[in-house]
Image (cartoon, rainbow, N blue to C red; front, top):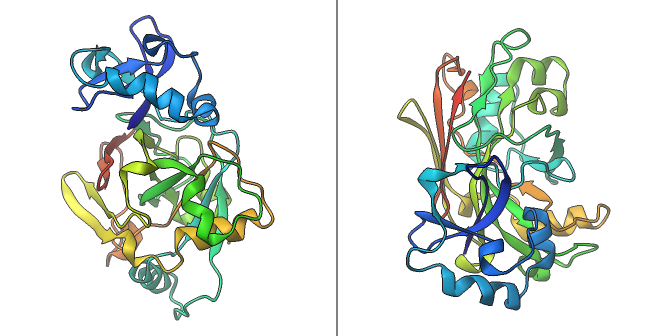
Length: 292
């Protein structure tokens, strides 16, 4: 099942389920459910909620996606987005080359957080911030959306605590990231978290979800890999993080990006105003944004 946050013609922000053919959206109210936001839906998720929505997903229920504006599925995450760096070997190697250092495979994951003012909607603008950065980069990533509180989670229980998956573009200012010798500032500028177009519930995927992740810039493919190439897998990440940080419903973990980012080219190919960035994840869809 797919869930999206959308703004209707009255300007009201709502949550709904997509029809089976992904052309229409059925609001929670149309299904006789409370008007939860996405985090509220995740917290309330149950077989009973599913049973109210499922019969409405075929036919012509709801409204056409052409008549609404899709927002980021979770426009205002309750906490910073959790991230892992260099979780694909080839991206770790290109990152080391860019920095002029020798790569050494780490014993532990590189975790950091990404500040989010408001997640950028599908079709929305990625601000160039060209007054403070000249090295704007893209990173297509599979995002894990937590469904149940995780506190000292065992790896073998991890997938039972996932509500679903979406796409995040971990937009990065490489010069800021390098100059300040950490990731928060260079990856946490306003508008640096495009997300969407919707959340697909975890039951639509295998565990683990071995999915193709790719990115196109102005129609040219730059990134293309599979999550089967993760250095550190999702159960390990969730168990490690939850050993000291309780994860709550609606929290988001992005799982790393493949090689092919702008800094990995010789010479680097950073984003500029007008560029169209399309992040794709198999089984979810496409997240398309323009740099402005």
